[in-house]
Length: 91
Image (cartoon, rainbow, N blue to C red; front, side, top):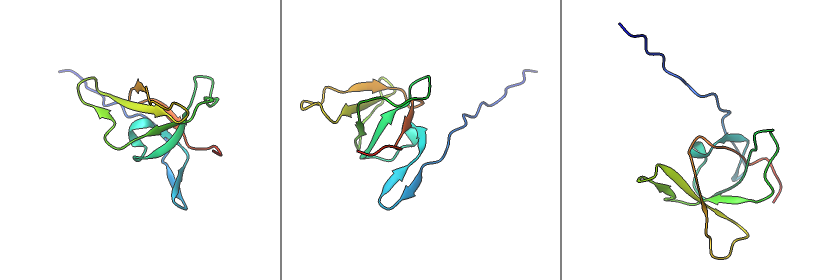
């Protein structure tokens, strides 16, 4: 009766190089305790470096709590799991 089409998001896989991960992916696909930068809409990277910590997923809001590396108190931000992130940078 109704045609339900499943939508699949195209993301690039994150490759493991040495002990680090290299590439672009969605935030939910990134392993724990990994440093990353946000990918803006125009394709450039953000200036701040963030870290996805273990257990950072908030089930109530369905978002990830991420911390900026230069913030001493780790105030953090909440981002959706579908947010594009990149580990292609030198820290």
